[in-house]
Length: 243
Image (cartoon, rainbow, N blue to C red; front, top):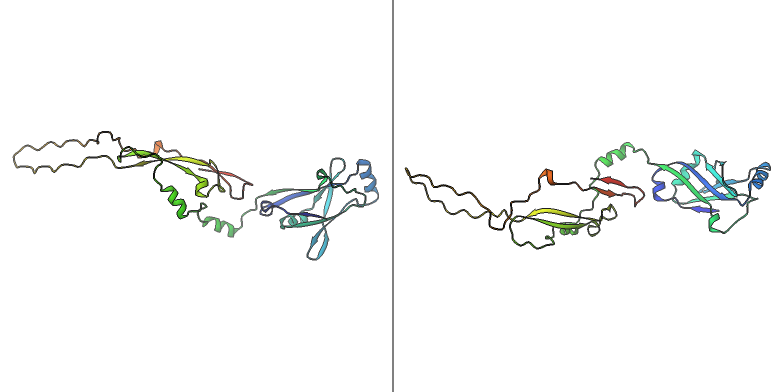
């Protein structure tokens, strides 16, 4: 009797094929002699109705091993949280060695989405978990104090671990966000004298920046770069790149 627990990843996908590898302890001659006298292996699965036969066929295997290919009708067994298999092999020798432990090999593919799943995906909420704590982290002041309050480029190190997003965004762990901060540095205009009829107009002085201030550093489309991140939504079984 062997107990298998298919992973959540396997159970959420469509199983296309599966093989049970079992250590028989028999060499090729022993396997041939056993097959000539009748079926070497019987495979059953434990269900609520008791043990039921599992349709399968024997495939090519290395010496002292047997590979049982499960039939298509038996593949739904791997969608259960617990799978109990009963294997009968009267001529096989039992071994407690770790390298002789039976194991399952399953090949899967993504399930085709149904109509309801497509509708849910189209109206799904944003995947990132916004919270007041995350917003406070994003709104904290720049890390380097400014020399003046005029317009300047400030930077902020944003860590996905601090935001609680590290189980979703796996790379990069953080990035430097640059933004424009401060006033434009324009002086207050003096009160201009009223114009007198017949008198020449007073020339208007051009607006100058306060000494030491720099022109506004607002980002232009040509100076901005998109951030490329690697994300996972199933605990690390699969990844995708997002920009």
